[in-house]
Image (cartoon, rainbow, N blue to C red; front, side, top):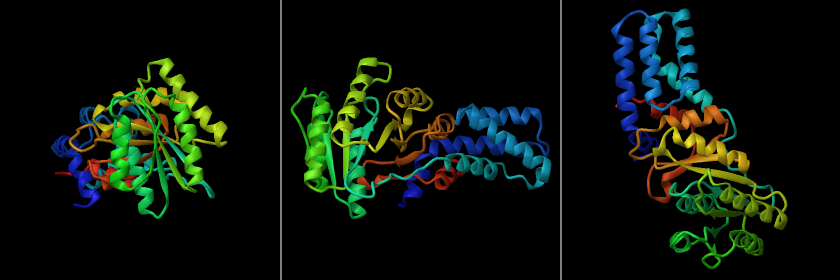
Length: 304
């Protein structure tokens, strides 16, 4: 099964309900009435697309209806096009520094899949011919270090660690030193999960980044927030607070397999303007892939 097919399969719950509702509403009447627009709005909101994106889609639908009439109007095509256009804004590329080491900090709340994401990203750049190092800066969660070491052994990627309860900023500092000594092109920092509402934990994350910047000015070059795709609109608050604390450069949305919350990805990008850079739809290393706005939009609105 190709990645696009996996993506469509991941959105089964979203698309089956959304496509069914949309077709039921738009085929019931040859006219686009206030009542049908209200029903369409409800269907889009239930798919977690968010109010701004929903209003943008409805505006495009009304414009298309006025210019070409109901007979030529394909609501799914218009909606998918608006979503793809919105998601295409921003820079979805994970940028490597022209020379030397590129440092990527992986952040997020507990349980989103930061550790596996760090390993999968290291695997991805390895597949592209680059060298990578992992840093186990989650020094508090039970078995977090071992989890990253297992991934490192599985993927043949070195892992820099400290002891449990060690200062994570010190581990990050040592990881940069080790990565530079190895002439690695990438270093992925696996930080501890932290609630976005806990100021002390967010301050600790800021400290990690300050220490990294002192060791290698300009680092981290990328700060990726890992979001659990199954949490839906709750992820917006997480993204908002992390973006205030540490300037995010991109989002990684995981656990989209088996979720009906795929539309939340659109709402988050639409509201906060942070580009989605990677999405995950499974447990295998290859199941984390660079984000493609057009494929995502097509999968979200695909009829089952």
